[in-house]
Amino acid sequence: MRYLTFALCKGRLASETLKTFEKIGITCQEMKDKNTRKLIFVNEELKLKFFLAKGPDVPTYVEYGAADIGIVGKDIILEEKRNIHEVLDLGFGKCRMCVCGPDSARELLKHQELIRVATKYPAIAKDYFYNKKHQTVEIIKLNGSIELAPIVGLSEVIVDIVETGSTLRENGLHVLEEICPLSARMVVNQVSMKMERERITRLIGDLKNILQEG
Ligand code: PRP
Image (cartoon, rainbow, N blue to C red; front, side, top):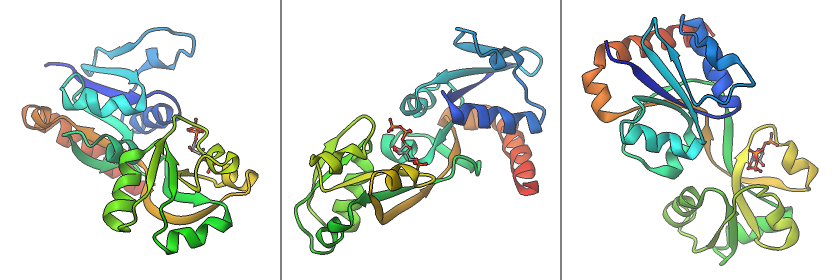
C-alpha cells in the first residue's frame, strides 16, 4: 500500500484537523511534539504522511500531487483558484469574508464610487467588486494587519476575514457587506481521487459520520 500524503495549514487549522482525525482513529503521535523541527510526520501503521505548509501553499502541493489531500480554509481555495477537488466542509474554522471599513464608507459602496480596497485576498476582492457588484475599484495587496489600511488612510475599505469581530470593534471599523461564509475544507488531487478512490472515499465517509454526530 502506498502512503497517502496530507498537507495541513500550519497553526490553528492543523490542530483542529488532528483533533478531528483522532475521532476517526487517525493519529500522528510525532506531530504532537511542539518542539520538533521535523517537516514530515509518518503513521507507518496506516501508511499515512502529514506535512505542515503555509496556508496558501496547500492547494499548490495538492494540485501538483505532492500531497494527495489538503486541509485548507475556503478563503485560500477561492484566492488560489487551483485545479483541485473540494470534497468536504469540515465545519471548523468558521468565519466570514467581508468588506469592512468605517461607517462613513457605507455610502461609497452604494454609489459605485472609485474607491481603494486593501486586502490579502486580491482575487476574491476583484471577483466581488468587478463581477458581482460591477464597481470599479483599485485593489491594494497587503500581507497582514489589513485593518490598519482605512485607519491610516491607505484605503477606504478592506476585504478581510472576520471571525469574532473583535479586531474590527477595537479599531472602530464595521462589517459593511458580507461576501461569503468560510470554513475548513478537504481538497483532493485530481489523479489521487481516481487512483486512491477507495481509501479516500472511506476517509470522507468516516469524517462525514463524525461531523454529523457533532
Ligand atoms: C485575521 C483577519 C483579521 C482577524 C479577524 O488576521 O485578517 O485581522 O484575524 O479575527 P477576529 O474577527 O476574531 O478579530 P490574523 O490574526 O490571521 O493576522 P493578519 O492580520 O496578519 O492577517
